[in-house]
Length: 226
Image (tube, rainbow, N blue to C red; front, side, top):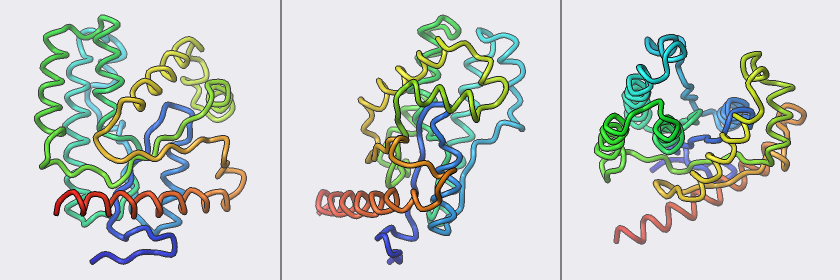
């Protein structure tokens, strides 16, 4: 049986952080991992063989890029559970299909056959009882104005130079996605309620919410399996 800390969070818990660029996923991942003494699972982009090609030709490489992300995230998810949990994960496997692949298809940078093939593969790999879903997905949310301000203040140079209309669309797509997401329990946390970069103590209320949420969801799962 896994141990629980002072917040009631099991030592084998797997927590995934989701949200659009600028919302603070990496900061939240590090803060939670440090507070809980968990490992982190971070998105790897430096070793991606398709990323540079993709930016040169979206239409040709979007399918390849999404398949690569799917394979890497799937392997990472298996590794996390083979370790026995105790992980905070920066970005979920679910965002790739629910937001990015869908956006490529709707914008015409991925054709219908490739999109349907990708979705079928995703469903066969991920949306099954055999796939180890996280205990909790924390969705970081906030107003577009606040998120865009953070991008301008803290974002990478490439992000700061990206047209505002792109970020508005991405914000809307994320909101639509999370409103229909049901693959695992979701805890929505508004970035207006804390600022970890300004105050480390602001993570404490988040930890309390996580502990309560995981305990409730695990009890519900246990009752369902009886």
